[in-house]
Image (cartoon, rainbow, N blue to C red; front, side, top):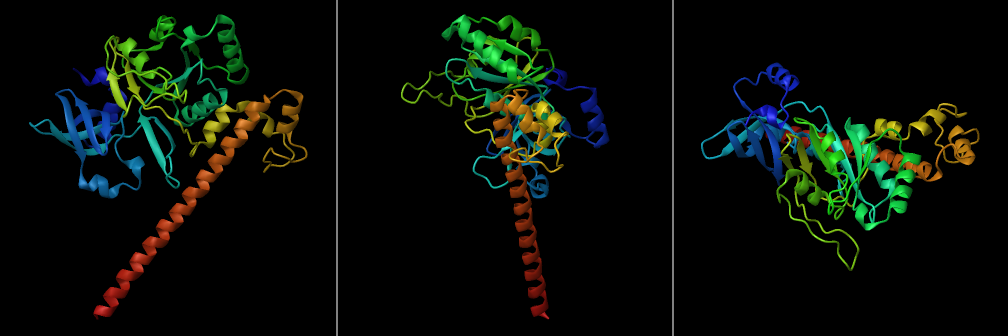
Length: 355
């Protein structure tokens, strides 16, 4: 196997040279298990840990390796390796970490395309699609909407769902598939290119693992049925893993996400809700919140039907989340700074008392 088979290219080689990594092997993180990693190299797969220096210099979890990262490492005969450095990422899909104050959780890195998978029978929700789109747009990843389980509804309902998406989301490819009948798979396969990396995003039970198995031609991931008592998907995929498909495409399977918190994604919101942003430039006040101000061009556009009302409400909700996350980050940094000052003063007092 060559590094090019898992996405290595001339740009990454330039980064390797710029960072003086000639003496290290290069590999790609294909899975992560609580700060232990599996890294794929030309010599094979290696279990890996990070160096103490890399751990000490990390300011947050964002600075640790993630699935999709290219890393410089030292390998040993026992299939064990040490990661010394992470090469600069060209894209990072992330969300607000669940239950953690002002923290970001990386989903995957160095992704070219994201497959936004929703099941049309129970999971379909345009608001959630706009949420995934915002994450993709802030991450510089090209989104592709995949509607699964179309064999469970009739053609009329499929048409209604497609039209409801197109009314709010423009210029994003939409592919409708059936994992059971493999309808639409010809379209999926045409978008998967050799050497490009794809990441699947979606809730549990929407058919991501079945899609991966069908695309790979192997039973790589266990699949399960929907819980009859809750009508919710069970978490089949327990961790993120990067897999090479038969046609040379690279796919990251991702555990189902029940919460998709918006983090630092002002640019992502602007791209996803470009119609709202365009109208906001005509608002009477520069600091208009688009909620109740007189002379708000956005509210006027909603009232005239130029902006979809549900999309407008979804935008306001995500904007509040983004603002709250940013204030949480500022507060957390202040606490860290105050704690640092306290430790510094404590050390000074100890030194003073010694003399």
